Length: 509
Image 1 (cartoon, helix red, strand yellow):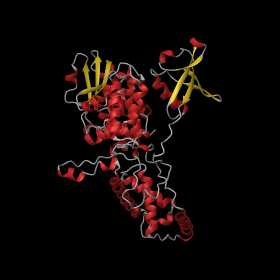
Image 2 (cartoon, helix red, strand yellow):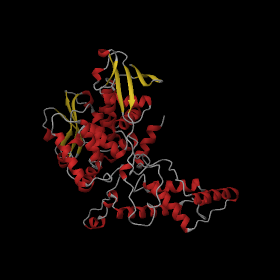
Image 3 (cartoon, one colour):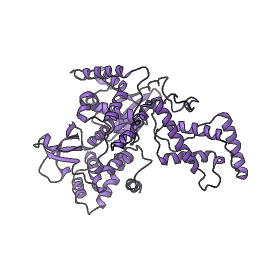
């Protein structure tokens, strides 16, 4: 179908789509990809019932059936509050000083993932001058710059603060990349007698990050104070460090400036009351979910409550729209767009690889129905359902297939994390049956049901695991790593050997 899309008076485009999406959100995602747009958008259409005046699109059924004319408006990003810790601002002298009362950079402001390559920040004028002269001398005769203790401290302070803006707990590989970038930009800083030239810088940066964490922990930074009692916990056998492990940008954010925990708790109660109404104010729910984000993350990360308890205190968090919004707050990535773009990119190659593994009867049974029906929904489902088998993991207690006559309690018994697929039909092949319902199961409860298809269930599950701070199932760690790092591109810089090998095969022609 051909769409006539108006972006501005001087920017009107033709957009070709195979079929119109089923929902307005899916249409927004399609247009954002096709038109290379970022941020939230509003879609308007020319309404023939009102002399083709523009009207906001709320349901796909409102669109004219032939060549609809649309107008896309990109919403302006909200202004960043003055207390936000900007990624573009250099770290202040106060933040890198020795005082333990230094202001803690609010983690809520993180909106970008770790950059590749890492950009070394600009140093003070005198240090930049010395480094430039040092580089000139290095190019002439290979002489290295003599770095005194004060200069090295200033360099480490500046670089360490730049690293903290992205991650309070950078990995060894990330620290190594920063050290390489430092001596790459300033080769005069290479270490004498070292073949790599950056080895000692790596360890110095690692120590600097530890010092910064200690300073900000004393200052009361939430994402660091959560681990203050770790030594006591280790004596009782709890050795888990509470930190971002799945590339969460805002794992444990600060409370908004000027708001106390009691103030945010009152907003939570207002939110609960609004959720009990038959006609809910969606804008109010959106606003309250945003303002209570820090309190919610504190409860989930510190308290590790059961899903039933979370649902009782935060019912709005389980709405489809709020799952996507919360995921965006945590990871700064659109849940559906990242998942489906990555999945669709690799579906053809995945199915091809599945067919080549003739020894797996499970893969053969998934692929056989595709010889008859090749819809995008079926292909996506086959790619996702076949992934555990291809990675030689056991999904028997994760992929739950049952007839609609089976009770909910029996279907979800002893299931911590799972996808429930309710079918009709006599065929022994899953994808040859009619799928009448798809849901997400957490802690023996059906948390989401009546989802559009299998692929949407997987995307929703990924969002819920992030939103509720639930670990991936250990028996399917590679399957979930592929979905996160390969499909969604979140934390893709560091993969296990098995997933790295799979990604390389997917990228081969």
